[in-house]
Length: 633
Image (cartoon, rainbow, N blue to C red; front, side, top):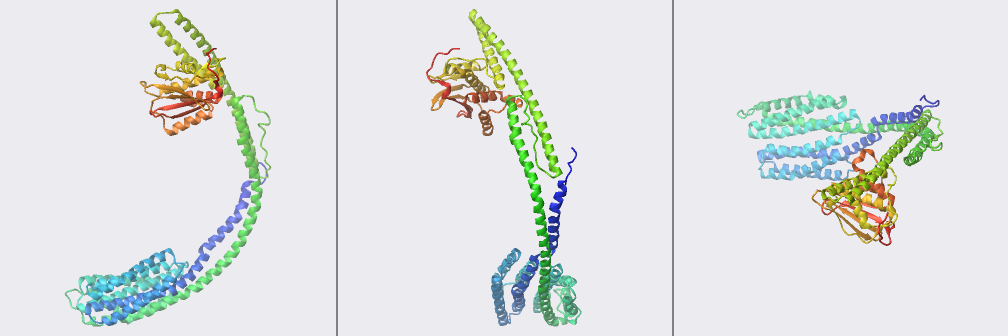
């Protein structure tokens, strides 16, 4: 089908979506690198550095001094007063830090988690001090105890240094690494005190010291490689100074000492070398932290200005996009709504009604029933869809008419064949009846009875074809028939009738117009009961009067059915669906549902207490005669 002239829907959708999409993509792509949250976060980091990181750094310095004093006390037993004074300083800085941290708001989840870990380590400081006072702990373990607290604070710094500006982030991260290198230097000073007190370097102390030296030098080298000129300058000058070189020589000397070898003469200067380097490092570290903090505010303000400009331009673009999109949306939605309504009416009303009528009658559809749908549209694709729907309607109607004719033809074939079989079987029954009356030999008479019973069943199957074709069987009664006779007639049409036990029903009769159908219905249910139950069991047929009519129950003792399948069969019995040739194994249930719907009879399958099924047939009072009378054709 060639496309209809007009503006294509692809162009409309392009115009509809191109401007807002490009505007939003450009706006948010630009804002993704410079989001407002980044600037605000930078300002928050500045506050954190002032009110959070600085007090924490004071805690670290106090812990480093206390660690050195504690180790010296352990190895010499002197300077307890100095150690107590340093402990007081540590306690004051920890209390101040906890107070400021408690007042700090809007901490990230990562910082909150690391702060909790740090609190736990600080709580363990009391245990470390108790062991030092009792002199029941090795000096290296004391160094490790204090180091765990300081390490926890550095992990908190890592969570805090999430600076959105990459250059500033690298500088801040490097300053943090220099702080870690400074703490390792403090650990080396404490270990030097141990070595000097012993007069030798034990293997354990040498191994620990070697690891500290390697860690400090690595951190120092990596941090300096990322610092810019202004921040790296003091550290570069320190690295070239005699103070730094003298401490490097001290480190190398301690690493090379053996436990059996006494300390060299230069060992006396090791504490002084460490103290000199410590003072210079402390001074440089304080300057680096101040320099980083001073860079945060200008970076944040510049970022916010860029975001403000981008946000204003983006807002104008978004508003223009929305207005333009709404204009085209209204026009396109009106066309699509009209198409949807027309298609819905075609599918749910016109075609559904036509197919429903064709199921009952093969009369060709009228012009009104196959009228094409009409939708006012200016878009070529919508017009093409309307034409496609009309083509689909024509094809569907043609297929439905063809199927209706085929169904009607098949139904007529069923009816014709069934009628012929009915006629032949009726004549055969008359012939068998005559032969039964004419013979008195028991064996021959038994064979004739078997043929009579077989013919009766064949007649029922022929009537099933007529019922499935929505026709009425030829048999009928004018007068009411006692319910007992109806049930016996139904049992007579079942192959294993000997297994069926009909209990005495109430003294009621069935109207003549319903006798044939009810007997057929009951025969189908009784036969199902015999087929799906063990051959040695009985099938009980009971009946009782109810407020609304007569209830007949057919109970077998078979294996039963799963609940899902049972519900499906009950649904089929209630709705009386159209006969499906693909489900010929359920032929009897189709017949039962048709007969039940014809006389307003309710049939329900339920689980039997014996494990099988119980078919409950509710005959309405309209089918029952006032008084039982003799049967007559």
